[in-house]
Length: 337
Ligand code: KDO
Image (cartoon, rainbow, N blue to C red; front, side, top):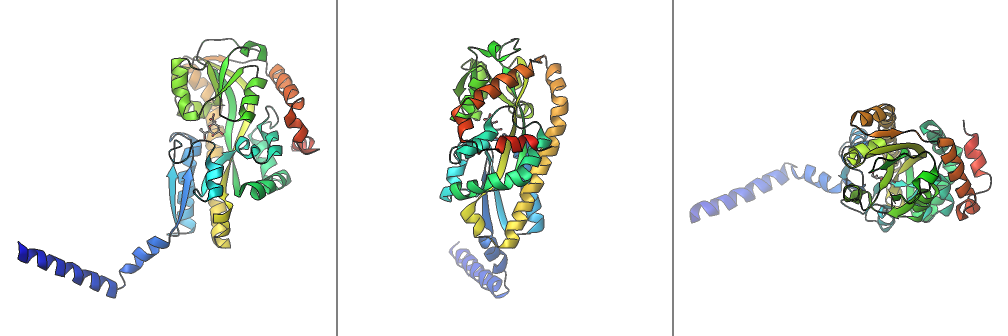
């Protein structure tokens, strides 16, 4: 026994010396210098903006083989929904896809993109953010948040879903409805503008709240509602089309600035590949998902969208938000064709 023990140790030492001599330590050393990219998102695995991160990882591995260690954390497992920008600014997180509502906390004028019925459709959204308006509105994000937006992903068009069978034609029909919204004042304002009683809750808690009746409904793009299985605990879909929603794939600025220009360019390209994958799939999905929900037995309500638009826009224009929107920006957004 003892004899074998000594022998095995001697053998191990010999192998190590030999490996070092032959340069076998090199791959290990390389692995240690791989730059870690930690990604945190509340997205559930089945949703397009969760799957897009794998596209990001694959694309980056192709353009920069072995240079990065991309770690994807879904279901808000690493950081709570809405806390990602602060985590990035503190240097605890490299990437996330942040919302206009997240941005508005530090860049109040960005709230123009949290308002209902401003962006018309996914095409309008991409043209706004990928053109001169995007260039302008992202500047203060980099300066004030220490976060650098790299690509704009279409999260989908938000619709109202209710746990009960209910006819909703105008905002007046949502009176008294406890509508879950994500937890920030911009989101809550949107819920109230729709005519409901807005109540804050993290995305991960919505399913149970619908099931138990703590809330009467929630708003989300339908592909996300399917991925999180909200249809199992809802009876009505109201096609309000109230927010053509975006999320911005962003990188912690300090960490981004520490990369070489080539690495930065490759990361940006990979983020754009990911957004493109998400956008194409989500748009395709949204075209057929209403029928899918109908087939599941859900009631599909087509409300008076003109009335919703009028009421919601009016509330925003009379609110504190409109006062801080840069002069002329709304007109510029509207003029993008
Ligand atoms: C949600 O909580 O309703 C929301 O749709 C808000 C988005 O900004 C985004 O955080 C999204 O959830 C998550 O990525 C989960 O899909």
